[in-house]
Amino acid sequence: WLQPARSQISAKKIHPISDLTNIKERLYIKWRNYNNTENRCYSATKKSGHGKNFVYTLRLWQFGWEHLSVQAISPHHRTLYDTNLTTVSTVDGQEDNAALYRFGPGYPVVLRELVFANVKKNCFILREELEDKKMGCQLVRPESAIDRRVPENCVKAYDKYCSVEKYELYEEGCEDIPDIVR
Image (cartoon, rainbow, N blue to C red):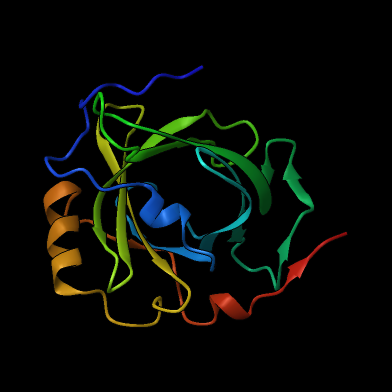
């Protein structure tokens, strides 16, 4: 099993990952700083779990499709995927501040640390180490806040912990794309 690298990617302030796992509504990736893709509407919905172990349904919209689907695009890629998520701490003796999960079938389990949380304004930043040892980031917002302007302190935190590079993965109407289960 994958062990978190102790404070290798830790920010100074510890943000409890429960700030995210306690959210009951769908979470969307607003921006990320790596892998410019034509796919959009990346989201996660908690399906079950409590404590340290959860199941999330991950969704994405394939460019040009009219719906989200469970049909396999290839043996290793689906647009709906249930992933097991386990919370961990990257700092000994501290509250869990990160999550281990895979992005889809065929993807490795990756440690993603919550490096920023503005719970009142519903803005969160997850950071991970990419294959090339660079830091990858995702700015995540719940569905109820996704269409609102990103709070200034969240933008500044993203620029600080990640980079000024922002690939926009959410677009208006993502929440209206239906799931097609066949």
